[in-house]
Length: 468
Image (tube, rainbow, N blue to C red):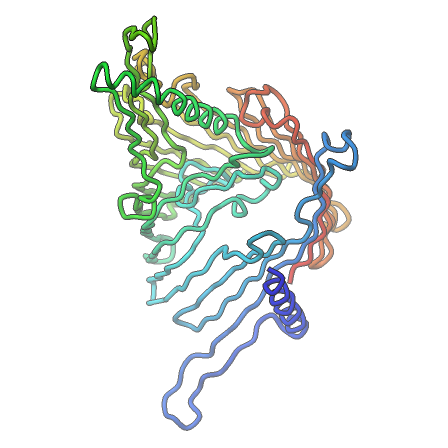
């Protein structure tokens, strides 16, 4: 660990010193007596170094013994090297943890006229929504800590993939992607950021384990009771969970339009339990019992068909997406599979008055065949107890002062069905490549909601960052 940190700091010093002279430098590979020539290689080094102090307001009231600012130092190093026909990129994330250096992206890209092919660890964006759009399905998100939601690229988990794009004329492009493995959404499994849904899942699994002895006794009496967990986490890295998609974008008049098809896996797990009624079996039980016989835990496959549109209308930069997610539960009564759903997103941004900018977006999913959910009393349906719709408002107001060096911004994420929210105010001062930010997060509303459950995690954050 100590040696790794020494290597990192030496490398950082070399990069910063080299950056004093130039961020871009090239090597001319022209022939020097060997015959023939090659394109010049351009190498670019960049990144950022930051120091942040993050404190939770509830901890301040409990004394200094409970205040922990977490990882104060973090950084990024971005390397790229390329010629006119190929380039390679490696983006590293640096932090003072057990894994001080991690790879955020690493890929190689080749150019064949209008055709581009790239492969490696990559973050891609599909769709036209500013954030959390229904068509942006390639990279799952990391929700293990909700203290930085300002840039969705920071939340994306890079995936190993092969991506190809071909330009047709000046305004059209067709893309194809293949992702050989699967990664679900990431949530904290313990601590202050563990969601209530994860806690409930763990409680159910513990309850099932406690009932194993009773179920084994039932086996002896009935002979047909069993626990069947069909999910094998090792299979996530096999082609059984591979995903693929195609996307076509073009411009028609003033409108940018896109169409896409994607086959993949829903990144939220489906969890259901099938039970039976066991009659009294003295001396084990004296009354009938409902006991689980099958546990289903998996990530459902689905087909997505979607369309998106963007255009400037009356001074508004308008964006919209619409998608249909088609799962295997075409009757809506399979408790182990999510129902098909429709998803849409509508948003815009516009400068209002006094230099204030508004960025607004509404996302919603609508479950189909909802009347068939949870009809069987002996099946715990994965969607039992959830609303037929899930609607989220994302809005941000910002204004800049002093020749755009000072920015005041307030953003909100509001879950309509849960009636809860996350409010994120910030003041940012930027001078050339140096920025200082004072920000915070306030969780409120229904304490059982997606954001409201973190009402004890209100925080204040001070950051100093240098980009190079």
